[in-house]
Amino acid sequence: MKKLIIIQSAVVVIFVGFILWYRWDSGTNHGFQFGYYGEFNRVSNALASIPGITVTQSWHNCDVTLEEFGFTATMGSGEPVRIAVGERDRIRSLSGESLVQALKTEIQTQARTR
Image (cartoon, rainbow, N blue to C red; front, side):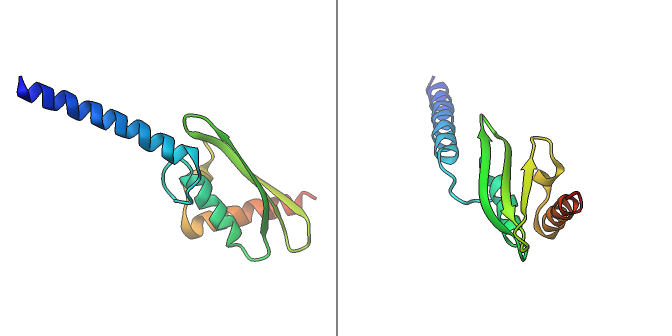
């Protein structure tokens, strides 16, 4: 009987802890590259690291998970660039130099179509 109470208590504590952590993590962007805003922050930091690009605006669609998000940036020439990242976009899974390269490719593609 004592073992059952301990197991039930542990399950309740874990469940309540998860809810509290989720509410804390999704309520405010703390700048971490993991958690609810992790992919958003990773892409934002990579975009800001590209020379000549200035992020001027960002948006995100909050739900149980962070669905879509995007950025408006300005190139050195003053032209705006819009980067949108969907739920299944491959950019979400990239990091480091491969992410920066994918963003540069997206920016160059937009610059060529103007």
